[in-house]
Image 1: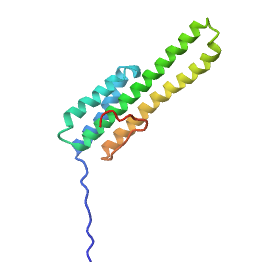
Image 2: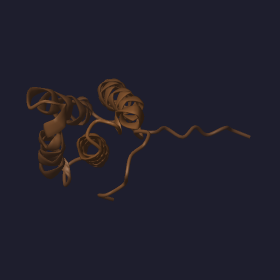
Image 3: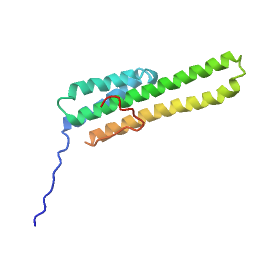
Length: 147
């Protein structure tokens, strides 16, 4: 009995470059406009997705993943800023007495914001390397807004 092997097609070099470019482009756009204006990262990933969606399923999947991740990180950052505004408001409204509660909460909020930024950076780089290697990648903590 002869064994048959199934050969899987790996993405072409061009597809891998487009896929990695979606992640790197989103990261660079977000960095160039500051983390708080990360909508640029989502727009960069969306632009790549629009360019490759009909030509390469591999690159389109990576671009959609980068788009979803950048939008998710933007929403998390907006939530952190909104909580910060509430904490400052509570401190002002209590004439500074609320500082006993809001100062530790504010410190935790700064740490959470830093964690968002580090997660954004590290996961985007990992995704770019995986894409360039021809592997799929799913970002953690991502809301799947675009399917």
